[in-house]
Image (tube, rainbow, N blue to C red; front, side, top):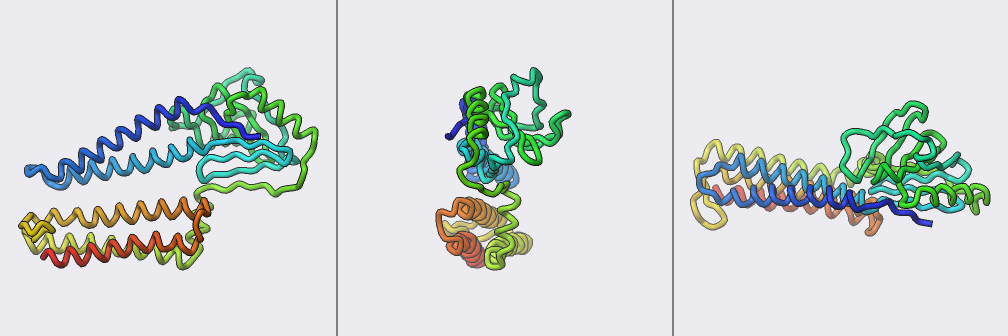
Length: 288
C-alpha cells in the first residue's frame, strides 16, 4: 500500500522559490544588453538565479517523489534519490506523534512543507526526517534510528503497519539505505565516468584562463555579430561552459539513479559538456 504525504504547502513554497529564481536569472540575462552595465552584476544575478533554480528544482523533485510504501515485507521510504527499506522483521513500531503527547523538534533550516535531514532527539536518539507536514507525523522505529514521516492518514498508516507485522513477511528482503552521497561515490568509483566529468570541468577552466589572458592583452574583440566589443564580454563563454557542465552533471546523475538509460550512455552526457567547452575555446580564439 502506498501512502503519500500532504503536498499543498510544499508546492506553494517551492513554486515561490522557482519564480524568484526565474526572475533573477531573467534579470541577469536582460542586463547583459545594457550598455552602461559591466558584466559583474549581470553574471552575478544570473549565477545566483541559476543556483537557486537548480536548488528548487531538486527540492521539487524530492517533494514530488516523497512516498511511503507499506507491505507485509516492510516499509519503503522514498524521497528524491534517497531510498530506505526497513524489512518487516526490523520494523519495531510505527506510532502517530499525537500518541506521544509532545512535539518533535525539527531540523533547521528547512522549507515550509518539506522537512528533511537528521537530528538527535532526547528519548528517541537519531531521528531521520522525511515529511511534509509536522502535524501528520508518524514515528517509525527501525533497527538503528527513528524515521519521521507524514502519511496523509497517520492513524490508518499505523494500524496497517501493526496488521502487516502480525501477518508476517511474505519474503525476506534485505534492508536498504541509499542516499545521494552513496550514489555519487558509486559514480566516482567508475574510472570512465570520473574522466568524463573531469574533462568537461577541466576544459571549462581552460576556457576561463584563456578568457582572462585575452582580456588582459586585447581591449576589444570581434564578437559573433562581427562587431567590436570590449574583451570582457568574452567571459560569457566560460559562464556558458560551466553552466553546461553543471547541467550535464546533474542530468547524468539523475539518469544514472533512475536507470532509465544504460549507464555507459550516461557518460556521453558528461562528455557533451567537454565538447561544448572545446567549441567555445575555438570560438574565443577566432574572436581575437
